[in-house]
Length: 455
Image (cartoon, rainbow, N blue to C red):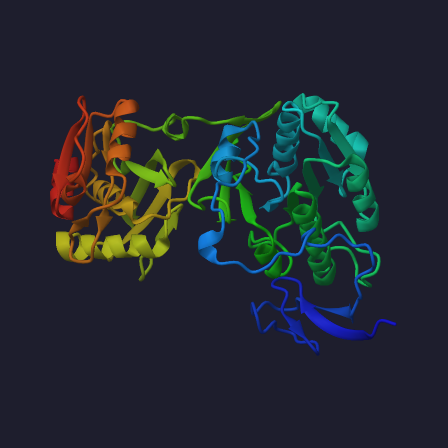
């Protein structure tokens, strides 16, 4: 007979405690500890093992390092993020805000896989089969090889998997599935952990590529214990603003590919459309000949992306000026402003500074420093930048401009979009030949960059 114990688990981070606490010792959130019955469950006979055969330890030099087989998903942007396609037997976790388009993305992917002759089982615990059919009608994702099941009992889901024998499995969502022999409510830490472990056994044992849809917390992180992200092979975040039509698919963990790639989609009435040229999308509404606007050549993985960076410097009415940024690291903006004050003599102690990446894009590389400096200086001096200039480079505390990676790809992307000039670090000019049709302005310091961009 199973031994029953009581414990308290944080719903935000999964931290366990033998007694109730008002403040979680793990994530320091208040009133998140809930009582759960902890049961030591013996695995029933007949459960699918992680591997079918026992393997012996072998020397690493004798292991075949051939590439993992890939299944193209039919969506180029999704293949880019995954590293080339789905790996049979892999377990993926997809998170995102409610209504962002996770179910739409997976339903379109399922339809594209069935077009290749594969069988797909779509298990929905939040919508009925009729609701799923209505979405499929709207998306045009109707196929004989797409099987839909509305079920939350893990045992019944396993029976359906054995009956259909799919090549691709979607669980929407993992928080709705429950294991009957675990005495906790669906969505609890214990249920999510046990159900994910069982899906991992099914995925690895049967070679089924499995996608788990996960809810997110109010901070945007995937709900449930952090152990959930450690158990899966790939963690994807589907991001986007409700007031914008585009969506970003970003990998934060990927055992079979890079985590630097992003996929960009445009949400329309008939589903998600791939955006093959994101630079053109982000620059479509850019004003020309205004102060505070600069185009930065950024890199998202191996893909160059040109986006508009805007800055507004205005007199403040407060003793301490405000420094706000959207889409850029706040600390990097504070650093750039300090460099402009110290090295360029710009007195900004009585000025508020607001920096924004147009379109809601988030840039997390230091190559945007120089563009931020040009935008802030342009707004401070009220001098417009040249409309067909692109800027990139890292700014140091002494006012120097440091080299960044993949300068050649950034320049070629600017040339492709019709830009006439690129301001870049002088140290990034080594090792490649500048293409014809575009002027390069190498700079060593912020002073040289401002002189080239504003005068």
